[in-house]
Image (cartoon, rainbow, N blue to C red; front, side, top):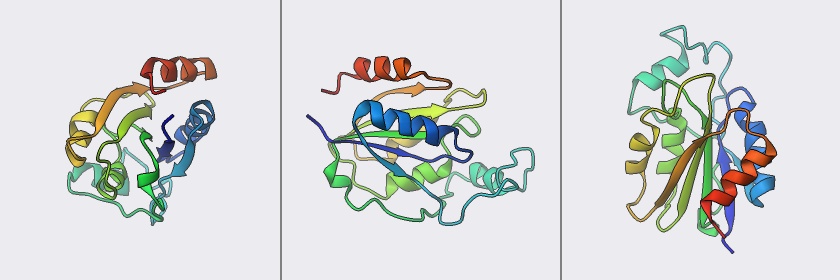
Length: 160
């Protein structure tokens, strides 16, 4: 049996609640990807082109610093990586996370929440940030997912 991790970034708590439920359903450890400088509500104002989140998302090189590092990524075989969708992609802090560890030989399953945007080019942007030996499972939008939905998704991934 593989050792699993649910790593997530959540700006408003929606993705955090989902990640906690997914962690329980998958029997996985839980790790919150926290920015070194927490986002304020003004930072998250997507209608303001000068807000921190807007500026970060316009800059493909943006890599917000993460507050704390996971002690040992080597302990995990499967990583569920969750985040809200911002501007049709993952927030740039997810890029920081992926570039901070060696994912060689691991399996990554992306999951996301969104107020209405699809995943867009998320996988296309994230895949090159990791070693070619990473096995990417199909990404899943989990807005409003019930525990039954989570269990069905996990079963469909055939991880065990």
